[in-house]
View 1 (spheres, each protein chain N blue to C red):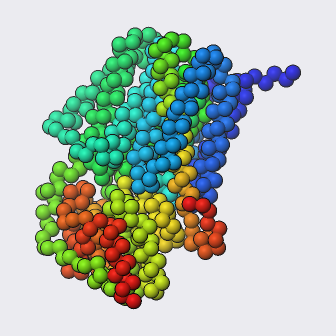
View 2: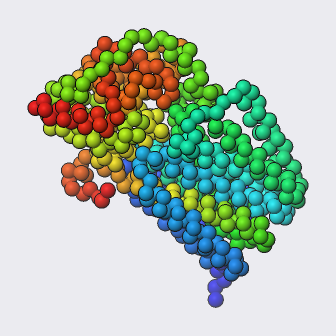
View 3: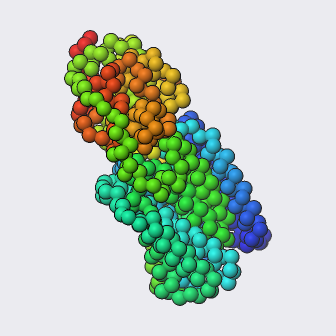
Length: 463
Length: 103
């Protein structure tokens, strides 16, 4: 019999899995191959899991626990993942990401409670990975709760940064104790994890909803790193590779997002967005002018070129199907219709693209900021649906505005602007919008879905 | 099994790979991609399984079971939502040709 050990077979399956992950991520970089990309990665995951299950050599009691736990977690996640609405995707990703971080922390906890890791490097790796994983776990859960509407206020108080710093330092000090002592005992290790969890909560609570995409992306990268660290502890190459790839990719993605919002990562994490807006938004004067849906419908029916700018209001109202219906109607009328997507429209970069794709909008009609901005000059109508900050011309002109310098969609350059908005109040970030009071702007108040339905009636009535 | 320095090499090469793979992704795929990378770190499942398999006390078993449940949720949930999102991307050409898949 050739001596191929189960250990070798397991490692080979990890090698194949790691290759499939990288190829899968690469295929996800183009819409044409993206679905096959996630399936390739899925095959890799299945292979690694089955090989581990077959060859890990657990006692039958532990094996039973493993299979039971996989079934429970897998079935709950499967059902919730199939049921979640596309609009709720960002918080779902936050939730699944938090679970990954929690799992990494659990691996670290097993290693540290046991305290038998002879290797000092392994102890240090387990501690760092456990810290990052626990932080990502509790932080992601707070992000989930905020986006889900379970936590509606951003909790801020004086000296908050110092409290967070104190928690961080205390966690680090305990971490050093845990990592250096081969067996530091249950209370110290437990306190270490409690503090790491607390830090994730304390860090995320003060961050405003508008910054959540950046935060979720950051926690995604952190979970990847935590998984990579625990991979070192377990001598598991698949975890090291997959975790590190995600850590690097997630860091890049986080930077891209922060850049699109013209904010540094430090700014997102340590400044309290929204608090300065009352002072900064003071430059907006003038009254908003309302329009009836029937009049707006007539205007659009006789327009040659229309650019639709969707925002989170569209997602909340589930109006993506109605908007596509309206766009098709206008195309039948001979108008040129484009969708303009700001990089941070919605709650995550690309969130709007997903919603429009769900409604069946071909991606050829969807343009990003750089492609579309020159087009607004020649557009007859810019239709803003539930978007706010991403079309605020103050970002270009008012240096006192909190969003000054953020790249925006130049909707104010269009001949006419129609804004569908729930009411007269400020948007999600609490900043006044200079676009809403321009001469060529008309406000169509109401829920996005109802308003677009009325617009469709208006266009039909017009001819 | 994996020597310290070798592990560092793996770490370095994987970091560059992650950076390179993502840098060519168009903005429209950013959310599915974040979801996809979220799925990929679901590989933590194999680590959680090994940790639970080695557990020899009630405390470690409890932590291990929690870890495996969370990791399985990460992997399965991450896969399901990513696939759902990506299935919806259809180009105008494909649609006209009637090759539109279900969804």
